[in-house]
Image (cartoon, rainbow, N blue to C red; front, side, top):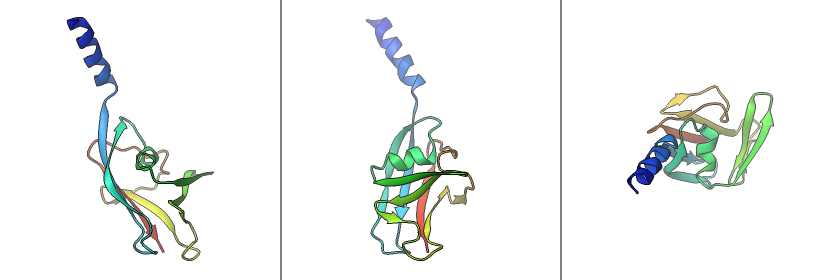
Amino acid sequence: SAAVQAGSAAQSADDAQITVQVTVDSSAADGSVSFDGTVELAEDATVLDALKATGLTLDVQDSEYGAFVNAIDGLATGAFGDASGWGYDINGEMVMDSADVATVADGDVVAWTYLV
């Protein structure tokens, strides 16, 4: 049984989990959508994986630039003016990559903000 335990320990090391904090803030709009918590993800997870792990309802569309998060919990791009919509940063830094490309690491903070 010792060999079995060693095998399962090695298996779990291969499927290493990272913990990422996700915040969602729509206070610039109507404040209807918010989230602040941590999610468990596989290594090499993307920003989009982290957002999906919150359980919020997402409307994600493909664009020429990659995945485009059009709406989170029903709050959509353009709802508060032509320039309004969701953006994100990682650890306070703006990221130009699409959410399905940018990856997160253990301990990162991903902040989604609705901009108007």
